[in-house]
Amino acid sequence: MIRTAFVKIFNSQFFLPIFLGVVLLFLYLPYILHGGFIIDDWSLMIKEHTDGGFIFAFKSWFPFFAYRPIAPLFLAATAETFGIYPMGYIITTLVFWTGALTIIGSVFRHYFGNIFTLVFTLLAATPIIASAVIFSPGMQLVATVSYFFFSLSLLCLHKFLRTENKKYYVSTYFFALCALLTYEIVLPFFVVL
Image (cartoon, rainbow, N blue to C red; front, side, top):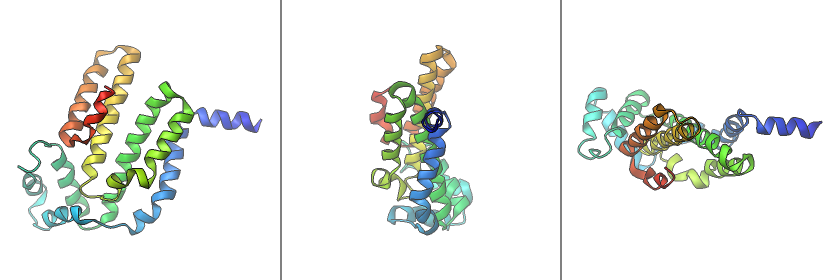
């Protein structure tokens, strides 16, 4: 009886996002409450303190981000919204990271099963694996946004393969392009696509 209930819960489509949320909250709550910036993140603070507003902050990233034109949208928006307070950046980064892992996990579940997906997701969520992305909450937000766009691309590809609906085919490449124009770190993932 208990085993059957556990199997039902484990196989539920809601298990992974809820479980991942609880694990991330447990792992990252001290970081959310007491985390700070690293040296890369201070460039956001400098741009935020120029009082030029969103448009100035957006323009100031060029030509440095000319080949990543979507990234400055997120950098300028977060700098304008959160200023010099790291908690907002940390939560935003974790939301994009959790969203990407949940989406990738939901696709993986169809191909690899629940146990593989659970192990993959737990490993990807741990700080030792995610540290480069997680512990630079300002500048590496663009990496988590890029991962999120890639996960949407993967989800659309999965839906296209199941339904053969052309809108998913177009969406696959739209989100792939968004991922690449945000941060090219996802380039190796396109072997999958």
